[in-house]
Image: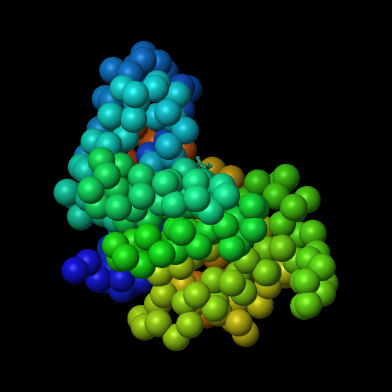
Length: 282
Ligand SMILES: O=c1ccn([C@@H]2O[C@H](COP(=O)(O)O)[C@@H](O)[C@H]2O)c(=O)[nH]1
């Protein structure tokens, strides 16, 4: 039986560091690498990036949208990205931001978390804005297969606060939507050791005052996108998460991929980020 995601995540970051590389084949990056914006270009780009970084980082995060753009052949490339990243020893967090009514969530969960699916990943990102309860099929499927979930709580983009900092009208009155999502995750994770399997997405770019990560840790993994290209730094991770920073993976896509197709340069960026995060997060 596969050990719980939280256990595997803790071991992976202890061994390979707290940096996650996004494998996001933007059309502009394909062009910069001298590749055509075709499925052949996508395949060359994505698999070269995986080969350069996956042996050296704990988590690889392909962004599904960039593969879906090419239809079924793009999805085939995504399947290979997932398989080859895992073969190189990295965990795969597929960034798909799914979420729907419960019965549809069940089908999405099986598509991405059931090991018999060709798209099966170690974890996925999911969106709670149909209500946290609509995500419970993901939780059940994740528990069954030792997979992980990262729920959007406070995203790195500037448009997020319109929804995520709105206040709820529940019995807790006045807490932000983002805080409510984090509280649900805290409940799901309970006192799991070394850390639970139900994570949050909290941007490395946010101001951070909305939730007391030190006082009410969610006891789950945290994905902090926006490191690098969007301006987030290792110091921001410490500022936002305090003691919970030990469960954070900071994620960057373009910041690494821009250095390609030079594999040594991409690997160097991973090693520098891991060193920087290690020196500040301990
Ligand atoms: O809050 C979020 C959640 C996800 N993302 C995703 O992360 C990468 C960021 O790419 P960079 O090139 O490092 O800016 C991308 O796939 C986003 O969809 C995010 O940015 N913010």
